[in-house]
Image (cartoon, rainbow, N blue to C red; front, side, top):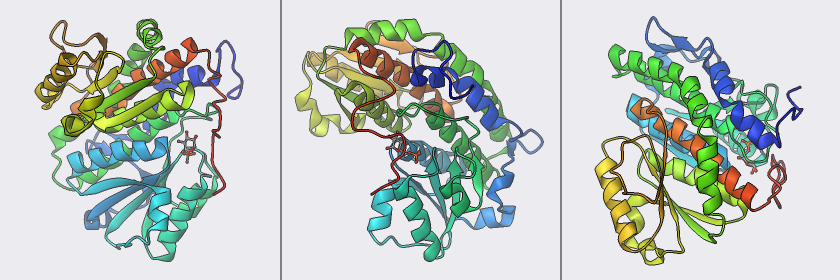
Length: 366
Ligand code: G6P
């Protein structure tokens, strides 16, 4: 039944709608309410081994890479360990310095992506400690890593990743929480995160309930040829994944940019024919982001704000307002309206959602 469409028009929509359940399964048994931490038995590291980690490097391709970027932000924020994400293909070809105090994390839905597998093999040859964040149990990457976190998101058929991306970010939030709780993250903060994580399924259900409104906005932008996707810090990997989704299934040119870099070049492209999707978390950068929206508006650029904040009325041309999550977890919730936006914009253009041209669900060749 998992490979059947049922009443759904395509797998992408089916899988978007499965996200509350996918997150629920990913969290099941993993929230430790005694220590206000995560219970990740599959990672196989003791608290002492956790404490020795000096750096975290996250590797993946496509949406898995962007999920890794969300994860890097979470690890730095919650555990205060330097962390960054890199495309697995780049990593394996540049003769990386493999460091024994770094935890390497290979992220993959299929567990079969050749570039990610090759990065894992290169790491192992050089003595790196690598764990997997993988959906497909028994897959090559899962076996090669030997330890890690399974997503339990269920099979994903649509080429455009949706529930697997969300589950990856949730699994990485659990890892960040666990790393944080053996360091400086307080039990009070741990409690807030455990609560925030357990609220995610209901929040995702509420966001999916906003589909009609998002579809109506998306259809109005279907005539655009180019679009910017902007975000700062927590909003930046969300913008990148949102642009990727739109490119994959609508074939529109979508370019993701750090909102802070706009004035250093791309602002020259802003005009009434260049809409901007602006990811605006309700966090300490809200004022910075609203100032950037004003700059875009002053140049006649339409702005679609995707936010969990109370924006001043009339600030953006269109607003997709979602429920507020724990600050650190907003990249998880804010990604979902962007999936719906890309989906409905592609639908308005009559695209074949599950079979986008030139793309494969999993790239197992060079
Ligand atoms: C392909 C797909 C992407 C996916 C990437 C990584 O390029 O088209 O949607 O994000 O592979 O796949 P993985 O299975 O490793 O997560």
